Length: 175
Length: 160
Figure: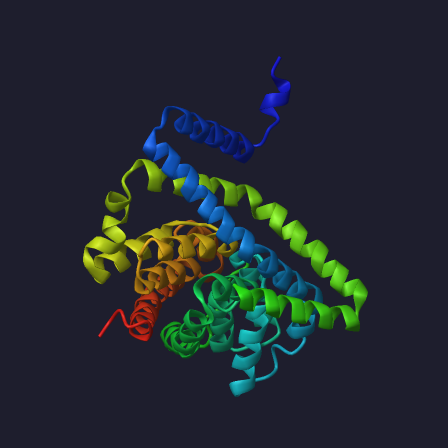
């Protein structure tokens, strides 16, 4: 029957329906429908200009920076160095919380302090390099610089405050 | 936009001279990553175009732009806390909204909560940190989004 059609992924069906809708709108001069089409083209043009270099930069990052190399530096270092490596390691995280939370456990086993672990966890949400590449490309480097300048002191502050509230002997659970 | 292309070209040729194999691997990775998010892109683009075209733009942007920075930022923060979209889709979407007149302050509230606060991922976080610590971390993320928004607002001259 229509086995071929049902094998089309949702996004392709959606796109085809959208294209048909815009074409029909153009035919019957339905102004809002035409606006959807021109908006889509304008958005797509912006994306086409920025997505290739952004994805290639992210690809370069992944092929040159291996998380395991950075991970080796973690654990025993304390003081400023501990925070530094926590943020650098966080920058290499791909996959967000699904990778960062298990890594927190690893860090805990390696003897990293709770402050450093929490710094790493929060940094893994806001300092990821691939994400930053997208941010800087689409919102401008100024936006990124201001956000980093404000966020990094704040995430260390949050880690300190949370640790003093939870206590140094707080342990991350094995799920 | 030109900066991104120049930077990419510079790093790519540098990488090519140092190690061709890794450079090819980078290109393959970029392609794989792009194919993975392409469906999400198309879906977000189609829905954004449809909602901006069919519902009048003024109505749609009313909450984000029309009622002042506070209402806009709170709306952005709520959306960012609930939504679970990858950054490779979120930042292009933010750029579209920016082009439609949404202030940087609101965008910052949206993107920061998107990163730091996760209603959807809360159960996962709770398994590792426990309920109280996970809750406090998310609330701290919300507070952080507020500070970042204000700083961004001041930087772009949207706040006094």
